[in-house]
Structure formats: C-alpha cells, structure tokens
Length: 541
Image (cartoon, rainbow, N blue to C red; front, side, top):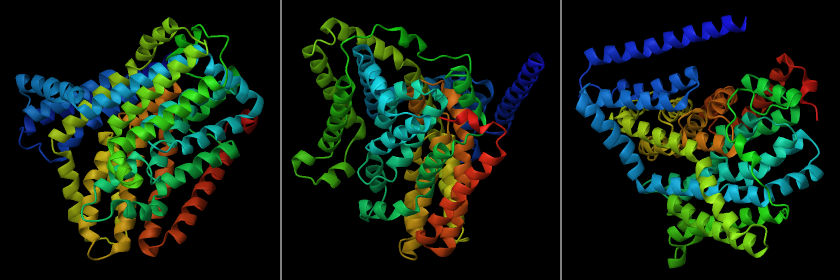
C-alpha cells in the first residue's frame, strides 16, 4: 500500500513539474521581454518556486528554478541575458545589499550565541528548571507563546531567541518541532505588527508620507484582525488541546513515539551530541538572552539617532533594523563570552570552537534566505509591484464597504508570492492613503490595517518568507515540515479575518467586528476539536 501511495505521489509530482515546464514553453513563444513587464507573468516565478517546494519537499532546487524562470522571462529567453540576470542582478545583488548582509551577520552571531549557550549548559539547565516549574504540555506551549509576545522588538530576533530558549522545554514535553516552529512564527510577525515599539512599526510609519506614521499605526492596531486572531487561535488551540491537518500527525507521533520530527529529515540532530559543560546554570542562558535584548534595543535606537537628540519613539521609527541588530547581537556576544570565561564555564578555546559550530548551524537558513531574496529580485525586475498596485488602484473606488476584505486578500496573495510583508505594505499602503485620506479617514485606517494584516498573513504562509525560514531555524525543524503543517492554521485564520473585514467594512467599528472575529475563531476551533478523528486523550498532559 505504501509503495502504491509513493508511486501515486511520484506521478503527481511529475505531472505538476511537466505543467510548470509547459507554462514556461508557452511563455517562451507567447511573450517577449517587454510584454511580461508589469503583467501576471511577473508572478509566475514565485508561484513556480512555491508549488515545486510544496510538491517535491525540496526547497533549494525549487527556489533556484523559480529564480531561473524569472531570469528567462526578464531576458526574453536569451541565454546570456538569463545568466547575467540570475547571477549578477539576482544572487550577487542580493548578497551585495547592505541590509541583507546585516541580516546574515545577525544570523551568524545568533547561531554562535546559541552554540555557546548549548555548550555552556545554559539551555540544558533552563530545561531542567522549566521541567520543575512547567508541569504540562499546555504550560510549555503557553510559555513559548508568552515569550514570543514579550520579544516584540523584531521578528528575526524573536524567531531565533524564542527557539533557543524554549526548545529544551518543549522537547521535554514532547512538543513536535513543527508545532514549536508554528508557535515561534505566529508570535513573530503577527506580534511585531501590533507592537508600537518595533522595527515593523518603524517600517509602516515610513511608508505614510505627509501623515504622523506612528499615530496612524496606533489607530490600526484594533483592526489588525489577522495578527490579533492568530494569537487568539494559538492560545485557544493550546488550551483546548486541538490540532488538525498535518500538524495533528506530527503531534501524535511526538507524543506516542517520542519522535519530534516525524519525517526522515533530522536537521541539527548532530548538535545534540556536543559536549556540555557540567558547570552550566540557568543564569548562563538568562544573562545572555537579557543582554541580547537590551543591546539590540540600544543598537536600534542608536541607528535611529536617539543619542543625537531624537525621542525614543522617533528613533525607533527611523532605526535601521539590520545595522541595529548586528550591533546589539555583537555586544550581546561579548557579554556572553565575558560571562562564561570569568565564571570558568567555558575556556576561551572552547568559546572559539563554538564560532564555526554556530556558523554551520545557520548555513541552511542563509542559503534559503539568499535564494528567497534573489527570487524577490526577479519579481521586482518583472514589475510585480506595479502590476498589483494597478489592479488595486483600478478597483478601489468601486466596492467601498468590501474594500478592506479585497485589500486583505490582495495583500495575502502578493506577500505569499513574493515572500515579503514589508514590500507588500510598502506597495499598498501609499495607494490606500492616496484613495481615502481626503474622503473617508475611518475607511483609510481599516484598509491600512487590512493591508498590514494581509501582508503578515501571506508572509506567515509563504515558504520563501525570511520569517518563515528563520522560524524553522529557531525551532530546528525541517523547513518544509514547518510550511506544510502551518499553512492549514494560517489559511483558516485568514478566512476568518477576511469575514471579519467584511463586517468592519460595513460597521466601521472594531468594537463590533473584533468580537465577531474572536467568536468565529473559537467556534472554528471547537468544531475542529469535535470533528478531529484523532483521540483527544493523545493531547492530554
């Protein structure tokens, strides 16, 4: 039976790949380099990459094929033009971008920090402490959610910090790595987009010209239904012990068989065999994490001009997250090294041995991030932003009450296809402000919120999103396992959010629409709990 199912999957994979090839052949004969610009063809490369990744369960080749498709379309299927565009304008340009390089440096330093905390025994000591204070699976998951909500400064920082701190705890209570990755991802961007003091608030405020960006951001928070309902869904599913879709299989396997991964892939499993210092204590994890948080906050406000006279809020609004996080993580690393060496938990040589270990642990996310950024470069060069912007602006005047729901769906699709939420609301927010700022201020706020919520939703679902990639890295979960288990949860919340935006479009009030969304979310989870074929005692404490 298993052989038959495997053969069927192979046939389906072959058919889908053949269909992708056919699409590209049609494009070769039906288009020119000029005709694909600012057309639906601009979205074909990311669609190819995403579909191939979900079907073949292989991220690297799928992303590269998507990049190659973008190069072929851009050059009009010219060989030399394709090679130049893929490597010079795509991969090399992505790795030459100072912001991207800053994120990669931040990733490497955090990888080194995690290796140091593991080697020093801080993570193991915290796991033992947590086992004595957290007594249930529900408690372990709620603690993960709480920590994710508390670390609201930046989604990248959130993903890797929450993962490194809570992984020993969730492992002890047999929470699957896929579920941990979901909890991390769902408390990263969805929390940052409703936190006034965060890199995301700074980004949003920067996209609104001629308005007080932070003041507008504060008004959008109660209407950011996807972010708020994602938090409600996480807590409700944890408390009600409900899982559905592929995640239920992962959780059942973790509980009954002690297998945290379910699939044959075991990312980072070799790291658990490393020598751990017997002198490690809980403070060897707490002090590095706290110093990292403090140093990152200082680094971000420094880049925003706080020490040159700017206010705290304005310095966050004008911060360079990439540079600030590099500064913060570096000084957090220095504090950690001093702590471990002075306490004689690790020798200087043992600390230095963690440097290549941390780098190696981040090679997979760095490679996927590089390909994802390159793919985004392909869609930008083909005019995807302009194409979507034209669609939204052309239909904005027609369906006023339904516009928030429409903007939400457009933002979801664009962020899912391009893997970027910042790029999505960078496109759509100026359009929304332009359409409504002089006619209907309340609808402008709701539509802005819909744009931000949709961007976060698409980013949350997309396998080529940097936040999704780093959530997998933080949980040390196989990336495609994280994507396939998370999508049913994210899409369910997206559907409820869309209905809630329909209500908001007619009522113009979050006081009415938000409770409706919360009731729909809890009702949905209750229905899934009742229809779930998996015995609920499997999720007992």
